[in-house]
Length: 370
Image (cartoon, helix red, strand yellow):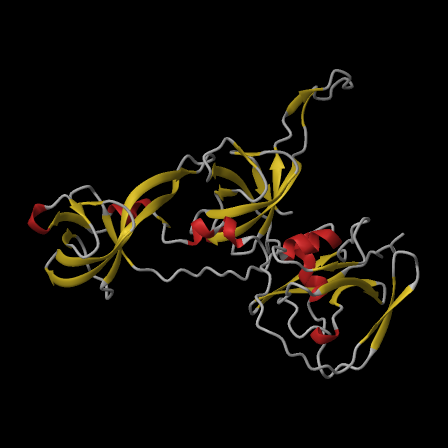
């Protein structure tokens, strides 16, 4: 039986870039069925590995961070052996490969295993020579690649007020790469490189019934070659989809998108409550590794890597045995049904991937602190 984890209150510094915050809570709970060790294989993610050891996988940084035995605790490779040990009664995940330990280490530590015996981890200077390998990702990136593409979420007014295509050369209707085009609008921007977009779906907040974002579907790219007043001449440099002159297609200046593939999951820094407003597959019910849209964004404190719980609304029931002068109708508490992680944020909305799902996730499910 595993050594029990003692409760304590401490200041836990969780790092995400240069930002830190203080969070007083219990130390991470180890799963009752966690293995003593796990050998990393291709296809593993940090989330999957942490879920084998911890009740709350997003808290892996608390037991991997500040681990001086590992040169870089965020970079784990196929073939590495992850081992659970206890130091001063606290759980730590270590990479139990001599080649992963730093050359300055020459110490040992004894920790209990499941049978109560001590595991001695001996650290000594080593030199490693190996071929270049790719570190495993935090989450399965292939499931969100479609949302790391050129499609953008913009404010409704931003797209409506953007310059629009008015004609192609020789009044051509269908345009492609290499074709000139003419657009009209406000080009008060230093950029000469633009994306060509058509209007996609509108995202509606079910609580306020307001449009919180509009999908701008990427059709291609164009470069401005000349401008005269509000008429710009462009050459299409890339064509991804059918581009029609006079079809209402819009031009938006190219944008640097701050999207990282090295996600560091963390709970939100403040109390948040929101709603799932859309399932990006179009299905009425989705599950693990599907993408959903939330009515929470940057202005609500969300960032890439924010972990949220998924909650089913408890609903109202009638208590037939309620005592006199007490309400017979009561609201059941919301029940957590899974976890998701935000991977792209906008002003009033965000995209998130479902990482755990005990039951099907549907539109109007609630999200909040895990």
